Structure formats: C-alpha cells, structure tokens
Image (cartoon, rainbow, N blue to C red; front, side):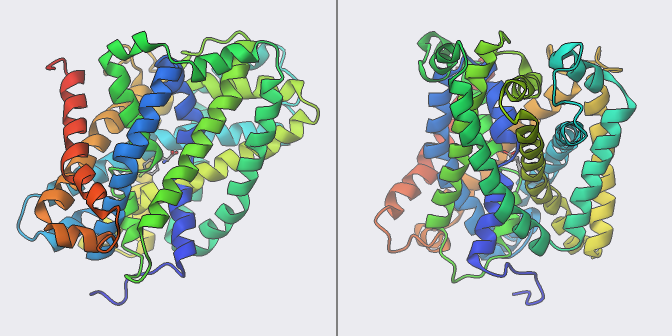
Length: 447
Ligand code: PFF
C-alpha cells in the first residue's frame, strides 16, 4: 500500500471531518426548502426512512470501500476491481462533486454576505424594504454575489491545499457545537412566536396525500444522500485516509445521527417562523435567508445571534465544501501526479466558473431554465442530488453486495463478528438497490 499517503491523526479527526462534511448548508438551507416544497410532515418521514434504511448503511459501504482501497473515488474501484467497469461510477462521483460545489459555494457566499452584514450592524434592524426584498436585490445583482462566491472558493482552496487536517479539524471542534447551541436557543425562541404551532403541524403532522406524488420520494432520497455527503466519493476519499484498525460501524451511525439531529432541529427553528411571518413554506432556496433574519430582528440580542449564526453556518459550509473539493483533488493528484497545491487551485477555478452560471441564474440569466421551471442553480442541484448521488450510491451498494463476497464486505465494514452484520448486508445487497431503482422508475413515470 502507498505509505506516503496522508492519514488522519486519529479516529476522532476522521469523525470530525466526516461530520463536518455531512453537516452543512444541506441541513439548514436545503433541508428546510426541500421539506417546504414537498409538503412537510410526510416528507420528513420519508427522509428519516431514507437516512435509516439506505443512507447510514451506504455511508458504511462508502467509507469502508475507501479505507480498504486507500485511493480516490475512481482509483478505489480500480484497485478493488481491476479492469472492471465499476470505476466509471467514480467519474460520475467526481463530476457530481464539481456540480454540487459549483452552486454550494454560491449559497455559502450568501451566508458570508449575511455574516458580513450582521458584523457591520446593517442587518441588526429590518432594512427599509424588508429582509425579503433586500435579499432579492442582493442575489439578483451580478458582481456582489460573485465576489462572495470567489471569496468562499479561495477559502476552500486554501484549506484543501494546506492539507485538510489542522484548520478544518479545529474549526469543526469549535463551530459545530456553537451551531448546535445556537439552533437550540433559536428553537425555543421560534416556538414562542405567534403561529408557531402551525409550523410544527406542517413539519410533524403528515399530510398523507402528498405521498401520491412520485417526486416526493426522490426528493427525500436525494436529500438523504446530499445531507450525508453520499454518492460523490467524499466519504470514500475521507475513508481512504483512515487506518485499518479504526472501527467503522459506530462512527458511521454517529455521523448519521448527528446529521439528522441538525436537520430536524433546523426544521423546528424555521417552520414556526415561516408561518409566524407569513412566508410561503414552498418559497424554495431563498427560505432561510428571509425567515432567519426576521426571527433575529425580534429577539433580544438578535444582531449578535445573527453574527454567530451566519459565522457558524459559513464554517459548516466550509467543512462540507472542503470535502467536495477533496474528491477531484485526490483524483488529479494521483492521475496527473499534480501537487496538492496545483490540483486544488486548478479544480477550484473550474468550480468557480461553474458557479458563475448558478449565481447569474438568480438575476441576469434568470430566464434560462434548463429543466422545467428550475433556474440554473436549482437545475444543478436537482440533477446532482436526485440523479447523480443516488445513482453512484446504487453502484456502491451493488459493489459491496455483489462484487465483494459476503465475507469481504463484512470484513471491510468491520462487521465480521457483529450481530447486525447480516442485517446490514441484506440492506446493502438487496434492499437499498431495490428501493433506489423503484424510486428512479417511479420518478420517470415508468412505475
Ligand atoms: N452534506 C453537505 C451538506 O449537507 O451541506 C453537502 C455535501 C458535502 C454533499 C459533501 C456531498 C458531499 F460530497
């Protein structure tokens, strides 16, 4: 095995980085808007089911493949299955990572802009035209959002090119607990708003009629994949920096539960406020950027909460984007023999360019809707999350279930002598692939 390959300093280091990857804009920004667009309660149930039945088992698959092969997403398949076509899924993963980071960085740029506006006091009180219009003016303009997107990419590139460890591990140790504490404080406050109960009903009282709509299933599955950072090879690449003696099952369950906690709790912050302030729950990707400032403006010390909140959100976004950038960087370092620095700068620039489309799609290019009614950003998100991620996830499940022998799969996942090993194997070999295929066919209208 390649002995010069980088390693995590400890299992805790891996856990923090993987949690940092999982917890990000997906838990707060994406979860709330996708739940809002897909009817709330019934979506939540499908989402939780996807996490438990498909997401966490596949997280274990992805990390265990990476740790066994000690390579990037393409190289791992090539190492474990030489001359077989499995590695093609690795390319889809690399492509998915580029696509996701392209728009993710734009949203993270918005978060930085909000942080800046709180820091300078400008968002302490409601702007003249209201937070909604202020947000709209900002996002539909050309230069400013692009500048924040660029700043965010520079930050991400800088961390990746110095090697993932020190900076990101430390930032995660401080800001993830801070984000959790802030969300809990915000929950209490949000629940005290007039009309809060309507929001809670929206999130927790399923409207079963929603389940008749096939798009809800793919949305829930896509959100589970996105939120757990599955299906692009980020977790595989992180797993490849892990030593063999660190046990995986407990770590993956911990990552999955932590990630779910952040999503559910953000829902409990956001939906009561959505209803209290008369915002439509299906307002789409702009949701949190309008509701949260409204909550803060009514809270005692709301301005400071705003500063801390958007700082934590930005850092949560950084730790996720670092893992996304690491996917193509690890690949290029191996294949093109580029230095980490060169690979990070080159890939970061490609991603910046991709993000320009996502950003301008909010304003100057708003008329361009690649799929259906979706603007460029939504289209990138939709294709990556609802097609690429589940597809690559499917291939990973098939790889562990059908390419590996049962013994190999269980040993790779450290479940060789564990009572849940059989259950996990059945889920991975049969259940997860069947569910993913059914949901795909259902979405395409074939079922
Ligand atoms: N899981 C991240 C979030 O919820 O914000 C997003 C993400 C990171 C998706 C890394 C995919 C990935 F590989």
